[in-house]
Image 1: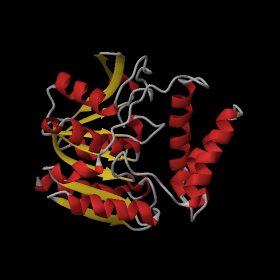
Image 2 (image 1 turned 120 degrees about the vertical axis):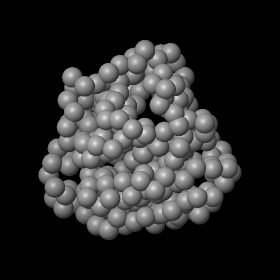
Image 3 (image 1 turned 135 degrees about the horizontal axis):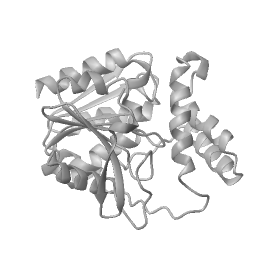
Length: 271
């Protein structure tokens, strides 16, 4: 895995954003899940960098990237980075928050995107409606409000196992890595600070205009509403495909890296 010494910094319009840039060939951008950083992709980076130029940013407010000091959109940050690196059009691969960034970017900056792979996410308009996720959101708010960082981290890790399993069903390295990354990102923020992030809205009506290949990859243990929304995304774009990873939930690249990598590399090589 690439270490901290390989992280570079881009002087964006609102302070420095960190990113990894390794390998050579057609550019593939890896967009991590919320509260993590580019290390979320440690299982994928070496395999991909053997054939492609891999760019793995730390999203603003995460990892080694600066926090926001004014309103911003994820898609605009990514567009600024890709233009700086002369790396577009690129294939965008995102999980959870990163998947939303991928679809936001193809909607807002289509000239910079060659293809999209989204996992555990569809567009920024999607919201979980199942009771388990609603309870989890309430637990996030309760623990943060009480300043209970360890309680918040425990709640955050529940997403990795999902609604139907305990964490002991996972390789213990997965929750260990997630906790380490999330603790670091959380330490960058303070209770009650301004959330400067501006959401991209009205995305579903624009989905049929996405004219690049789209692949959705989701664990079969995800809630039915997420899986249905992923099928809808793949169906409504002109060139879309939905794949399911058996025995995985929200982070298929962590739980089943062999299957995930095969799907991803097969998609990339066919472009």
